[in-house]
Length: 219
Image: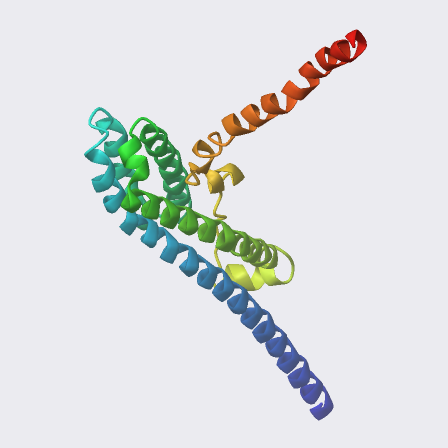
């Protein structure tokens, strides 16, 4: 009888240890997801802070593009409120709106040449790159966490202790390049004319060679 009680106690102890190990494993995975999301949130807030400066630098030029600037202002507020999916959607919409702003800048040479505008463009591009980089890690952690909470035996622990499914931060890959507007190609067209002139200059001796041959034959 005593032996059975000892064996029973050992079994219960092992079960408790196993439950504790599974619980701790889920906590670690959830903390990784939350940490990765915190890094994304920091970049979203940085983008949130850069938008007003961009609007101030553009609105003086793009007087007929008020609709675009208004859309950016409305979308901006959604970057720091709502769920992961809400913020992901706002980030994608903002990228599209920024694309329109940078396209408008093509019509204003003074705006394109503005150092403040170029600096904001670079900072927004760098922020978007950081978001894309951290998003990859975040989604990997989400996948690992969700798999752990939805498979046996962890699923029983997850349902008991309310480990909820985490949301992915969905964003198309092309959004990474939306704010990367490079105007350097405007200067690359200038050197083509001297090259063409040098090429024509190089063809002139070949046109004179037959004439020189005729003079030699006449003599």
